[in-house]
Image (cartoon, rainbow, N blue to C red):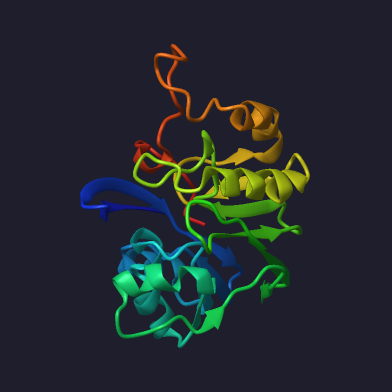
Length: 228
């Protein structure tokens, strides 16, 4: 499901559309990136029990509905500890319940979500790989148009590319990439572009490249995605 709102990034209001992913069966779910509209998210969850709310980053548009969604069923909230300072910008009087680490595991509805540290956009950015479903939830690390940005910039591009090449592009090519922003793609669709990204195509200016830099994934509009 998709929610939309405005986020303050370095003093500038940015219009952002977020994907919130719901993984589970008829009885229980895990919510990934509970963004902004808890009522809308819980409407999609329905009567199913929320076991956990996992935040792939501590940014406001990834955590703003986390507490309300989790509190309905007393679910736990998970975040990488390196993103706790970002969490604190939204929630000043509380902390997440679980400090996620690389290779951590969450289980729901007979499937397993494996935690993969994919820093770059934020220090504690993570992705969640589900081998059984052949999907990886990449947060801001990787999107349909390439590495994700924050406010139109790459905060730590070298780290981000290391995360993508060393972790995400080791997954099977048919793995569906389900990002925090924009439409889905597959690992196989994006991997052929990796060498160009490493060689500087992402930061090349319009004067260097007539086609200019990639679109900022945080500003994609007209997204059409399934509810779950």
